Amino acid sequence: MNAALVDAARARDAADPLAGFRARFAIPRDADGREKAYFCGNSLGLMPHAVRDAVAAELDAWASHAVEGHFRGEHPWMPYHRFVREPLAAIAGARPDEVVAMNSLTVNLHLLMVGFYRPTRERPAILIERGAFPSDRHAVESQIRFHGFDPAECLIELDADEPGGTISDAAVIDAIARHGPRLALVLMPGVQYRTGQRFDLRAITRAAHAAGAIAGFDLAHAIGNVPVDLHESGADFAVWCSYKYLNAGPGAVAGAFVHERHARTDRPRFAGWWGHDEATRFRMGPEFVPAPGADGWQLSNPPILALAPLRVSLPIFVEAGLDRLRAKSLALTGFLADAIDRELGEVLSISTPREPERRGCQLSLRVKGPRESGRALFAHLEARGIVADWREPDVIRVAPTPLYNSFGDCVRLVEAVAEWARGR
Image (cartoon, rainbow, N blue to C red; front, top):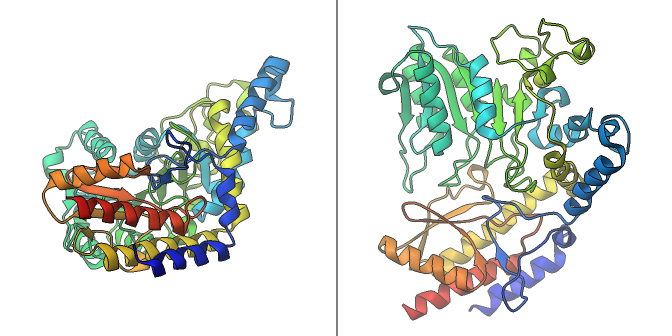
């Protein structure tokens, strides 16, 4: 391995102002007790050590207070979702009343499409990217059918127009304009899960609104990864999960954004009592009076044991500083991309856009060879304690995340690939 690369990584790690945050996370270890190089935060983020005590505290509150835990203790359950509101808004680039932690991503997508996908005979169509994450496509197709339309005619899928399967900004804007008269909803990702491409939320929203359509976003791979600035983008709604970059654990409570211009809306919605205006909720009246803002889209009281990890993970981002996290992310992923180009150019190609502003943490890698070679490399990495992610048909995803990955981790990945290449 290039000694200069190793020295550069050591120097950068020594100068990294965020290096200390790594110690706050549980790093998986191999059979010999060595820390693994974990590049899978785009699939499941690592556990903050503080989560264990946070969950235990709620169990203790349940044991000690029982039903009175709704009103007593350090973190009473009744207003519990408020404990995550401020940091969640900061990470989402939103105002506090525009965000809420609730449900799971696809549930939230369905709930918000109830209000924001209102097809007519003239405007029945939804635009998504071809190769969207399956749950999004399933949700969109089922919503179209639910409203009595045919997905074969009303589901528009935007094809890639760039090498590696990415989509140019111009192609997105052109597709919105071309299909504009038929569009009810434009639903795009913040970051595409397979390619790692980051999309321009503001430009897409502007184009969708100019065409008379609603702009919604799936931020599963964007929240906690790249700046999203939901409020300033003008997006109508967004949804996300919290178990990837937000490090809230498997099946964590997801989130939703509803722009403040829809804070008091008469849009149809599926109503539940926790979305009822808080001032009169416990009068138990028959009429639904929605709470203003995103809170009004809630259905049921929040799952406290599932929210506790999010309550302790989100403040870590605020403490680290969102600007500093983005700066380190750009440095880490750029360092890894440059090392792959120099050391492994004959072995790997990078599908993710090269422009830093068009990507987040993730690099999507393809082996230059048959799919079987990619699977063989993936198995080799796993055996060497490198935790990456495979996505069909032939993509190895690696995501150096700034809270717990190091430049040394990146060198370890490059060394493992080089070892495999020499032996094949």
